Image (cartoon, rainbow, N blue to C red; front, side, top):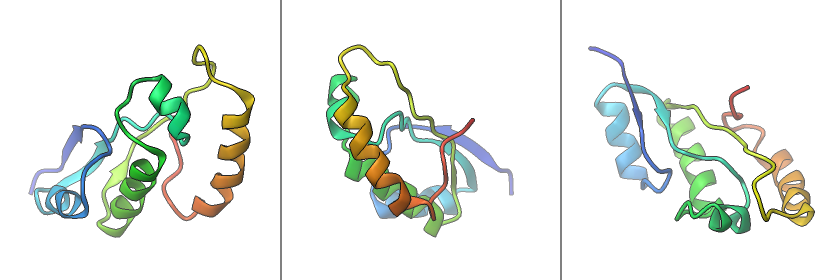
Length: 100
């Protein structure tokens, strides 16, 4: 079976991630660029921190490798958002880290 690389938002549900795996998708770019809902809203991503983390969890469960990034320096972001992310990151070290 061919391996596929696709991209979309991370707002997929568990069944959709399972279907990606069944279709042969190994690499997936979910468009995750922050782990803070406030920054995501500022970026107009249309997604939340919880949806991003859920996707990372399901990707691990179904062996789909997510390629994602943490952007910083976005206009209008604040230091408090990074404090929140610093508290979150130790809780998700078992999930796939960002690229780079």
